[in-house]
Length: 505
Ligand SMILES: *[C@@H]1O[C@H](CO)[C@@H](O)[C@H](O)[C@H]1NC(C)=O
Ligand SMILES: *[C@@H]1O[C@H](CO)[C@@H](O)[C@H](O)[C@H]1NC(C)=O
Ligand SMILES: *[C@@H]1O[C@H](CO)[C@@H](O)[C@H](O)[C@H]1NC(C)=O
Ligand SMILES: *[C@@H]1O[C@H](CO)[C@@H](O)[C@H](O)[C@H]1NC(C)=O
Ligand SMILES: *[C@@H]1O[C@H](CO)[C@@H](O)[C@H](O)[C@H]1NC(C)=O
Ligand SMILES: *[C@@H]1O[C@H](CO)[C@@H](O)[C@H](O)[C@H]1NC(C)=O
Ligand SMILES: [Zn+2]
Image (cartoon, rainbow, N blue to C red; front, side, top):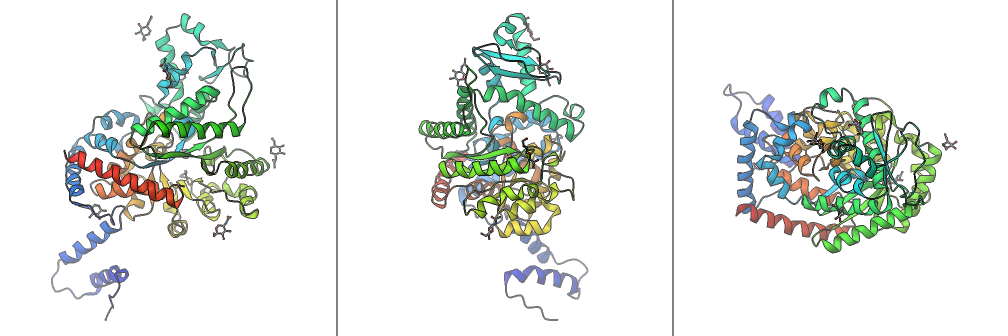
């Protein structure tokens, strides 16, 4: 039978055809065919279309050697819980390479989970007028106030921290605050036996930080510090999912959401002015998915207004909170359809598919995100189970924001070699790597997550081409305008080439 093999699209069909139907002259499979199939797979993978120059090829060789050595060690960090793997990763040459590598943009991080918590404890809680109370869930709350604050339900009376520190051992107290603010622990498997427990602690940790970071002066410093920590990790641009909560002043007065957005705008400008090479940051306004449909209509209304007023700093809208326990996107359809109905632009960046419960209302979120024209999908962990959604996402050029460490700590997957994004990378599905809540996991800006993706998802297959595509994806799939994107990518290329040259020294 004659099979025409004119176009490259047909090559695979032809190869498979000939594999099964060519009369066998010898019993062994044809090694040329085998090689052709291997190359075909490699071309499809993330990085498969990236052509490396001579310098990059040399760097790739070095990188592969480093990796080989690390893969031979008895403990493979991506297979371990991050809290146990972190010291190994920190000592790894591949990690130090990734730290120095320009990583472009962080597209999925949350406002109050960016700054290492030591700063909150060692710097912020040491300021004047900081009160603490101890609640009946083994947690604490903080507030700044010029007068004795009114007691919270289920919490002890507020105590001035300064007074408390005179009575108790400050080091021990501070360490307990640090434990309250992160999920980090020596024995994660027994401390967090299931998703309910770990999510509960996660939400508690957010509430502990909340009283500190919503104090107006701290709110601004926190954002500045957050940008600084990402900048130090060689990230040039950040898109922050932000609750934009009302901040408060020492006398209890509160500021509006607009104040918060204005503050973000000022801080970003100021940070850029002091850090040449930093490209900027934008805000994705988020609300908790626990709100009801009436409240959602009001919020979307406000989001449209804010987006119109702050088009430069505000990129769009998203929901946060545990997907499995919150309302699905479809529940909010009336609210989410408003911008289209009024012909107003409000880009969406939905978290969707951060679940491993199949067939639930929440499991539909990825499809609904696309139906509402979401610009990207946060997590998309469940994507492999939805072939039609996957095809649609590819057609619409919607990238998935993959956050490996977050998915592991929040118990969707334990061994990162089994993360579904490994499959997405193998087929070159558009993804970006991000870190979700690095401060809560004890991770850096993006480098730890890049390590997990490079070593865990890619294994021996991933290489400098893979990294280069992931890095440039981050700007390609950002919310920047076409012109800004072009400039950003040009700047990134300069940084990239400089990094390659320096690595060869
Ligand atoms: C690097 O990985 C890509 C994607 O799998 C592949 O196409 C390419 O051939 C690899 N490069 C080298 C030098 O192995
Ligand atoms: C606290 O942090 C701020 C902002 O980063 C910094 O300016 C200040 O020096 C710090 N204070 C102390 C005591 O570390
Ligand atoms: C406070 O606690 C730490 C750690 O338990 C201990 O090393 C230190 O000596 C204590 N300091 C005082 C003043 O008791
Ligand atoms: C939070 O801090 C309080 C007060 O020091 C402490 O009793 C409690 O054990 C801490 N909670 C956690 C989860 O570490
Ligand atoms: C939503 O919540 C608000 C405030 O709690 C309430 O007034 C309203 O009736 C609720 N709407 C629906 C549809 O449940
Ligand atoms: C999504 O975009 C398509 C194409 O631009 C448009 O026809 C459709 O109405 C949009 N849907 C929503 C819900 O905005
Ligand atoms: Zn998130």
